[in-house]
Image (tube, rainbow, N blue to C red; front, side, top):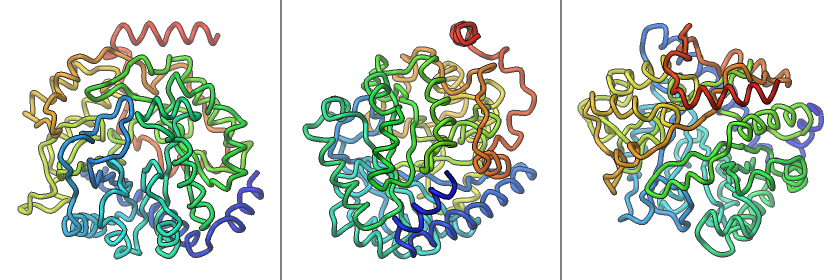
Length: 422
């Protein structure tokens, strides 16, 4: 499997882009994490991986979208984006996840990214704006990987994404990337309407045959004004997804991303470990994309970007409260505690619609990636090594007894799954 993956990388990817991936994302990314670990020992947190929503607008209307896509368009200006990236680089960061809305609707995005060849950018996109011409430009830049979302077959994609012919248009964008030998990924927000179609070996085989180099299965989260909770996976389905990912990693020559487990299979939250936080199109600094409350902004020029992260009491309390409550997703498991934290700090609703607190209050307790007693360790040696040194909880969860802070409904669900598994 390792040799087949190496062969694919060498023969199916642009060599310059592959070098940028290895140097900027690989080597320099590891150094960023090492700096993060040193900062943690001093009680300082500045995320080695920043996620930036550069625009709120989107051409689709997906179920469960928490972004104000229909509101007046807001973009992070080129000047502000340059300043943000430069300040992050001063702290040792080189990797940025570019999200939206639909990032390719930002008119100056590629101009900005092109001026930072020493960084690596992962663009989360529906792929419909990636023409052959744009793919050629991305290949020339070499420091960008498109991560294109596919949410099901033709029928399911149209339903999930609120528009017609979504699947075919997205597949066309993927093909434009592959024709130009870009290091291309395909992601899926797993939910009840697409898990049977896409969480299977045949879909992985098709991606490999197409030339896709990596994939990412993340779990649907019922957020926003139209949360669509009926799409949520059951606890058993989430466990099935984890098992599938672990099994495919030792079998298929394709990288499979997983941001919510360490090498031992223990759950974690990237925001709680300090590995990542989020900046929205208005410049507000948030714990993560789905927790849309903030006290800091990149437009506050009285403090550096690093100082705002390090000195934020709201972000610090969020991490500590979450770590002591669960190894999973606090917004799903204990939305009540998150409400109290927001009220304590007077954090501001950073949405345009200004209904984020009502949405939080209306949430029901649900399972997330944390399922104690059902941990599934990595089988693939390279993933185990990488996670051991550069992707784990870094001790932030300490020796907390999370059973004391878990919601009773959640404990019952986890107990039921454990009994069924046994």
